[in-house]
Image (cartoon, rainbow, N blue to C red; front, side, top):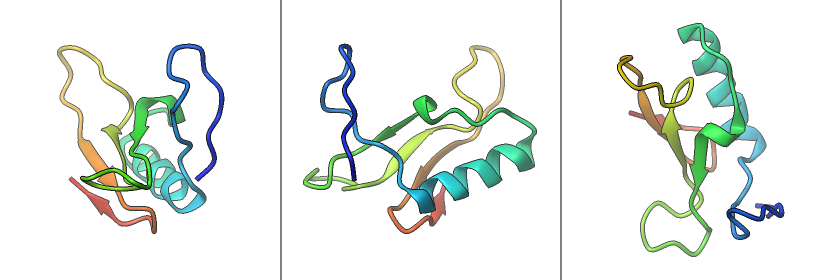
Length: 79
């Protein structure tokens, strides 16, 4: 996974292609906008869920029911 610079989170990792495809598909099915920044990607050396992306489908919106998912590095979705 590639890192990208951010003053707020200098160690943030990017969603890979398989994860992006799975998340875009989910967002489309739920009728919400896909934004990569809505998901946190664990570093490859994390003790728990290495390389997984997790977050709320369509982002976190207070007061709305949303689906929270984890997506493996190979694109498998878990909720």
